[in-house]
Length: 178
Image (cartoon, rainbow, N blue to C red):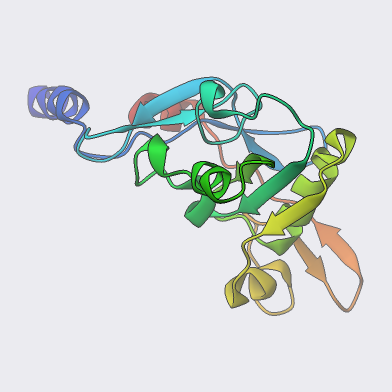
């Protein structure tokens, strides 16, 4: 038992594994990150952040205005926990087109249906464009008839019924990973 406790302490001090951000199932039935949290990426070389809106990135990197807003929506490629916060897509896009404001919305494992839900969340901010980073898997993962997955939002094309993710959070997981 002592070995496991010492191992756990060493793993936390040296950030041997990545801290997992806490999630919650929202009132719409989708999985979101809990707002205002941070943790270390594997090895502890940099931190990841979840901003006040519950999306990856620091609060100080959020747009100062929602005027000329473009949302940048995707999965782990946009989430980008494996890189420092200075490598966010919104930062690169702002350097290319400074007259627009960019807001990133992402979650590992999200699929096309999740991306479309993100666009609804931002409708009140009236983005001029929603930039979706989509690959072939995002389509397949959205269709229950092709690949049933209780962790993803899916549609059954035969019954036309939507299936929302089954929330997998737990107190034990929170203790072990954070």
